[in-house]
Image 1 (cartoon, rainbow, N blue to C red):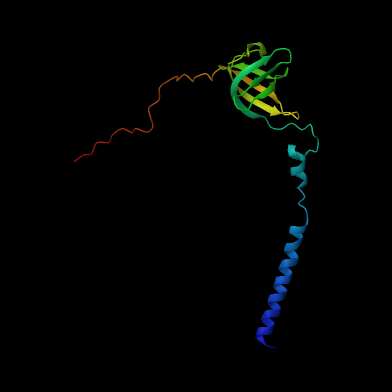
Image 2: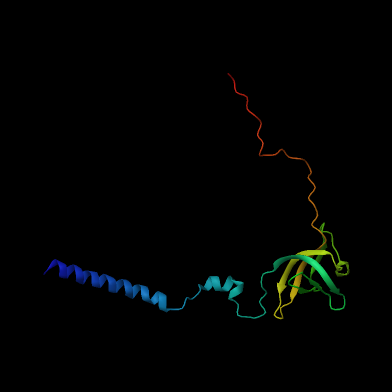
Length: 151
């Protein structure tokens, strides 16, 4: 038997085996592992599954006390619904009420997007962020004491 014929036949067999092993991975849809599918919130097929809240920071442009909503933004105006379970705080983390949200005040917090495109507040902090007061001034780590050289 000729060595060229033998190596070309061996090459053809190796290629065929590799393709037969690789092709099912590309053709079959991926199935999630059972333990991951059970623990993953995105795996649930219910449309009511809550998305993870995302942060916001803006200025209130109008408040509707009757519907417990406020509108915020400059270019993109968004309506935020304040639910009874919404945690409302002042900038220094003390409790606040919806009535303290007034036009022109800075608000920040976390919201979920609803199916109608509006936002539902999870937490709201009213007013500017409280400045952290330094308890004890710490030495600057960028400046190290000069080491004296001995001659």
